[in-house]
Image 1: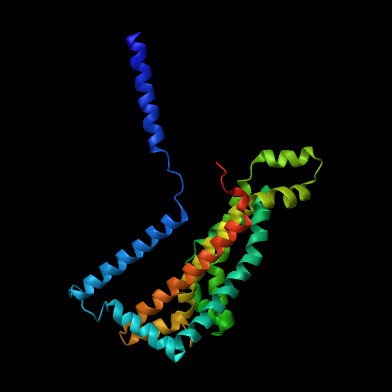
Image 2: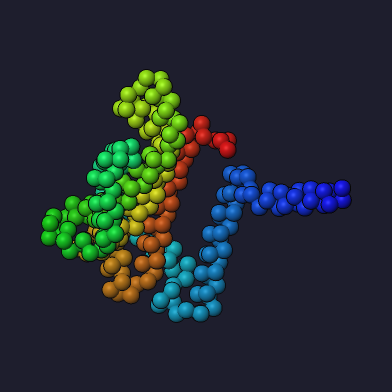
Length: 279
């Protein structure tokens, strides 16, 4: 009897430990924002302290005040807004071209074994090729105008997007497809009315993540043979060791990427509100 009780106690304690180790429930929106803002403040304070104490020469790491001054000056002169406009245009065109082509191919690859065999090995092969190596080739192919920038951003996002969309489609439970077949739907009907809507939340997350990569490839696209844009301005600043301008533009790029990411995240919460509370 004592042994049984001890066993039950031991089992319940192990169960309790397992329950305590489970991932906690989501926190409130206000608390989330508070923690997020605090993390930014901590990084900013550490940056200010390092530069104020002279741990690193200001030539290599200027203080926050110097960077803010550059942002204000370039914004006042209009240079920052011009560079932002050009860069946003290039990112969105290259990214949207990737979306238009990658989503249908990903859906086809994820829903058809034959299409998967035809698309995924080749896509997987190309995605391991460094995009930077294509920069001189793209200049030879299409010149140095915006088309070359679009192509670099497209190359950096398209192949990853195809594979991730296909994976999102394959994650749709087989029971959903069986239900469609039970209702008398054909393969096209099951794909259009069941598989794609069920995979859409994951596809949207894929598009959001790939947009972040598009912003990363923007700088690569504008490093060579560019005469405008944020990446071009960073390259120009590097030649004169203007690290305050480099950091200022990098921060603005981060802010732009964060804004676009949060807009897509908010749009996803609105479109897929029915997923809230699902275990």
